[in-house]
Structure formats: C-alpha cells, structure tokens
Amino acid sequence: MTTITLVQGDITRQSVDAIVNAANSSLLGGGGVDGAIHRRGGPAILAECRKLRASHYGKGLATGRAVATTAGELDARWVIHTVGPVWQGPGSDPSLLASCYRESLRVADKLSARTVAFPAISTGVFRWPMEDAARVAVETVGDMETAVEEVRFVLFDERAYEAFAEQVR
Ligand code: AR6
Image (tube, rainbow, N blue to C red; front, side, top):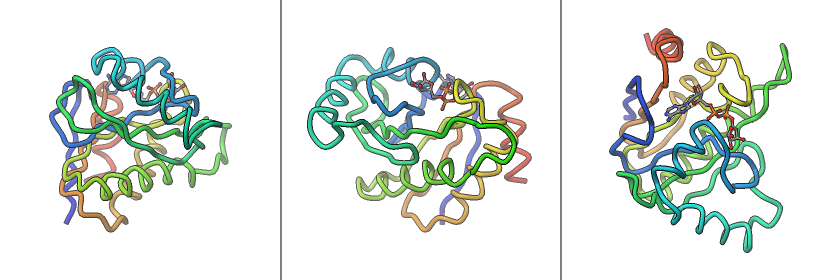
C-alpha cells in the first residue's frame, strides 16, 4: 500500500530514498527544481548525467521517461531524472505527464527505493496548469502497483500545495 503525503517546501531538503528531478532531455541541468538539485547535490550528479549522455542516452532522455543517478550530497540515495511535457494549451495530452510519474516509480522499484519525493512536474518552466498537473499526478500514483511505501509530493508554494490537497481529499 502506497501512502501519499504532501509537504510544502524545498525538495532538495527532503530525506528520502529517491528525489525526482523535473529535468529536460539534455540531462545537463537547467532552472527550477533541476537547478536547485544540481546546486545542492554537487557536481557528482552532473558527472553521472554526462556519462549517461555519452553512453545509453546519446540523444538525451525522451519526454515521459526516467533514469536514475547518484544523489550526490543530497540526503537521498538517488536522483531520478524525468522529462515532463511542455504545456501546449487547452487539450494538451496528459499521457506523457502521467508517464513521468509511472516511469519514475518503475525506476524506483528497480532500485528498491521505499520513499520517493516528487516535485509538481511540468508546472514551472513547462507551464502545465497546476490543477490539471495535480490531478494527473495523484491519479497516476494512486493507480500504480509499486513497492514504494511513501510518495511524497513536495510543493514549492501554497497554491501548489492546495491544488494537490484538493486531489487527495
Ligand atoms: N523544490 C520543490 N519544488 C520546486 C523547487 C524546489 N526547490 N523549485 C521549483 N519548484 P520547474 P518544469 C517547483 O520549472 O516545469 C528546468 O529548467 C516550481 O514552482 O522546475 O518541469 C529544467 O531543466 C514548479 O511548481 O520544472 C527543464 O528545462 C515545479 O517545481 C524545465 O525547467 C516544476 O517547475 C522543466 O520545467
């Protein structure tokens, strides 16, 4: 049974087995959560991302997919990088956003991670509306068969927290 918990705060301050990064397909860093994770996690994460680009992910990580690296100096064992879809306006297909949550939890299961922290993927630079993103996130995690015991959504501000709280009620 997976428990969903909600926290308002900074995902880089969480103590969990795996922290999910809302990355981009280059895997080489960016702003938002991605920038914060690399800043606080230190250079070991980027070094492993570069190795992934030089081996299995020459063209980068596709939208909706996930891959793990070390968590460097973060209080976690792994960072799971996933690439959310960019909002294309009303009618945008949420299946790739759902895939981010599903694939990240699949990777977590392979690693035997028991606690996983997620940010609100795609809701920043990628502009996915928070209410819709919260619905997709909570529904997808709720439907998953996984050995992960706790999925912790870490929401940066009150608006994001309220949107997720609305979905878990
Ligand atoms: N902890 C938790 N949530 C955060 C934090 C933090 N430290 N910082 C921001 N958020 P974003 P995306 C929230 O832009 O939309 C990057 O440049 C933020 O308020 O990080 O998937 C990547 O390299 C928002 O609600 O990710 C990609 O190019 C949510 O996290 C691109 O942005 C996601 O915002 C990915 O865009």
